[in-house]
Length: 324
Image 1 (cartoon, one colour):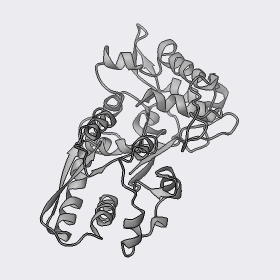
Image 2 (cartoon, rainbow, N blue to C red; image 1 turned 135 degrees about the horizontal axis):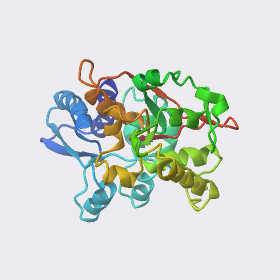
Image 3 (cartoon, rainbow, N blue to C red; image 1 turned 180 degrees about the vertical axis):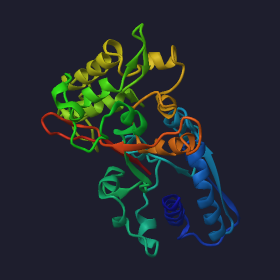
């Protein structure tokens, strides 16, 4: 909540600080966040409106096809006043003159210091020496949430940051081997159907990119000014094949088709229901986890977070992302 208040105060403060008194105006603020995050923004908006009489903020949530809808609004000349952007998308808007540089506002706002923000995210959201997007959040995207109860039942120690992974299971390493842990935490019935998954992935790309990045691959030649993509890199292909092996052959991980048809649920729900021992996703899903896994409720279990294991060569990779 404190971060939301600071972000709102800084962002809208920048946009309104130089302006003289005027008639009441309404600022449209469009975000891609869902209900929980909308509620988190509301107190900050109320505080902002109280501090700036005559300015109202209309918060709009667009959780599906955000960028497509935003581009359509720009094309129709009905774009919002304030929008959320990520490092990969803001360039297409900035190049078209759709975003207003914030440099002048920063200079005219007493006490504002861009150095208080993560330098890597500030750089990722800037172009040509101009700041187009004020950083809002930065979070790891490939972290592993785990169910302590299922680990305890299997007699497996919790991840301590020293485990590694390889494309083949290494039973001799026991709890230090990622695939061994995944295997041990998977349960199947007498017909070979998985009843408890050792692992699940929130988005296919999270697992694939973590594997590929661990092998030294990258998406593009230059993340700020990309000219060439490397999606055909054999290391990305290996990442997809690895995930298919875990889902189709070993059945330690539920695949997307299985989630959408047979199970008719999402990986997050499987985890919160105690049917998945480990779940790879981003830090943003802490909010729904705290909502759905409540102390005292039926099926409650304690959970924690670990980094995705390092590859056998020692390369530890945790993809991160941010927005503003």
